[in-house]
Amino acid sequence: MTAVHRVAVLALTGLLPFELGIPHRIFGRAKDAQGRPLYEILTCALAPGPVQTDADFAIAVEHGPELLATADTVVVPASYELGPVYEEGVLTDELAAAFARIRPGTRLVSICTGGYVLAAAGRLDGRPATTHWFHAEHFQRLFPAVRVDPGVLYTDDGDVLTSAGVAAGIDLCLHIVRRDHGAGVANDVARRTVVPPHRDGGQAQFIERPVPQPQLASTARARAWVLDRLHEPVRLADLAKQESMSVRTFTRRFREEAGISPGEWIVGQRVERARDLLERTDLPMERVARETGFGTAQSLRKHVQAALGVSPTAYRRAFRAAAPHSAAS
Image 1 (cartoon, rainbow, N blue to C red):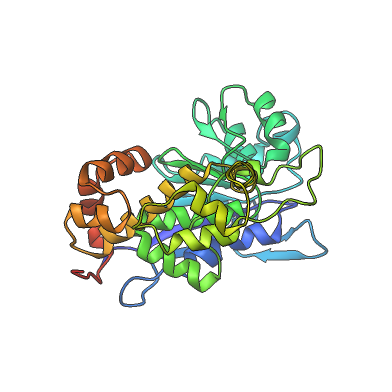
Image 2 (image 1 turned 90 degrees about the vertical axis):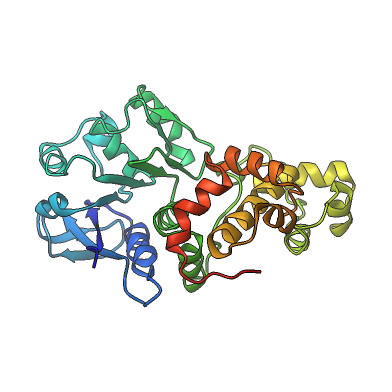
């Protein structure tokens, strides 16, 4: 049996308890078809013992930094007491010694301001990264070699991944589970955690606007309506009708809420549906294209390639083994 993937979560002074728990909650719920855990999640600190959080309690951490040398993935959650890491962009001696223990090729993940630690360690130079939108400008000034994208929920550069603030850590960990074991496993984790398997848009929908918009109406009903009709042609006027809005008003409010246009959102949902069918079924590409509203195999290939960087055939080949329960129709 293949060894279970070990995730080491680095607890730093001033950490946020919510974000510390995200890797344990998401990776800890990932199981194979026989119900066996797919990840082992362990917490470590710069020294074993109590670690003060930003709340009114400390946590007792059993493992020291030596655990990092055994990890396949290292996760650095947010902390509000990073000291010179946040102020000057440099690691403390303790942190530098801890990071020196990490083996080459180990996957590095940050949640929110945990990205400051990866950047100070030089692990984000020349790479795309994000952090909480509130800190993005400061982050970019402090680390000019990093390609900061303040508008996304997370970034994936292969062996280095970063997330925006708080709940975006859930999005990123679900993305990692999906990447490692397929949409079926990730969707199961999301259901058990009672969170959406994939959130649309980016941080733009959460950034405080200078002018409040108290009359802003939701477009959630239209989104729910279209999810039942992804296999059908959908007109913008039909979506607007669900919310009793004009097309112009609906389009503006949809973008304000989701961070992307209705058309982009629908394409994204169709790609997610295609991923599910490619993983779980043996349907021919023409059928997958019809079931997802892309119409033709050529259109399916175009959109899947643009969204995922691989063809539908290559995606199915890569992820089919991770989905043991298949259906022919």
